[in-house]
Length: 353
Image 1 (cartoon, one colour):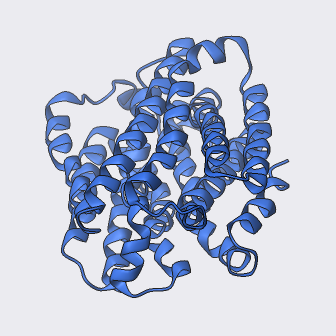
Image 2: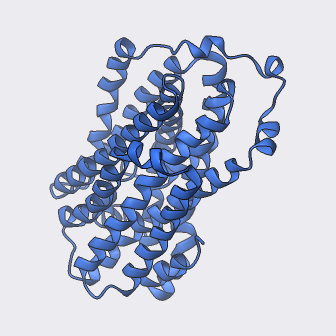
């Protein structure tokens, strides 16, 4: 929801706030910067104090900060509200991952983590459609949808337990380890966080610049733009839903290799697409790669990191991922201004090798 709910209304929001096309993208990426900055803190709090309270508080902050966009007129105040949204999102993201990692083991964990990715992706089907439909009335209306996190947070007070493993985890001193020790002893972590960074960098190059590409094909209706984002999230959700079966046959390394190949194929196809139908197919293909990456990196962290550090290392996924989201419009804006969206796509199709 964080970015996808308002992605279809980027163009009317740009006009309503009177900002440049390259600047309006910051409204859906600023939360990513603050999510990245605050994720290590949230992970540390989870490891030391437990996941439940952090998760519930973060949900409530998320709903209040996101919903405030309904009333804000200033671009700079918008960025402040999105920063608060990112802080809440840091706790939600790490909290969900740790709850699953501390509750399940082995193949069952992979299957449930796939369901978690699928739920997130199918939420991404609903939110762009809802954002596009509400945005047809007013570009402000999609912001009210963020407030669904408030009743969810209240429900979590009753429904979410504190996993017992939290009370069994030792401190840093007791374990005789540190974050740096774990990094040095697990080279796979560099693959995990690298794939997380590039996956989000590429994802938000589509989210931010796709509406402006589609305008060149005569597609400007916010609901229709939302359909393209929906194609990506739906294919990702379907892939994540069967992730347990995929993981039972392939290693984590093989899965991320296939996902990287799909990235290159999808972006090359978009750069050469003669019409919007081919673009839709390529975007759906990119969604498949995301559906593989998302549960892989989250489950892989749980497999290589001691339980006492799961909050921190799960939170680092958010740090690397949302730095990628935040940097996407900044890094690609020059290419967009000089070469257009296809120039952005061509610059990406040769990178994640």
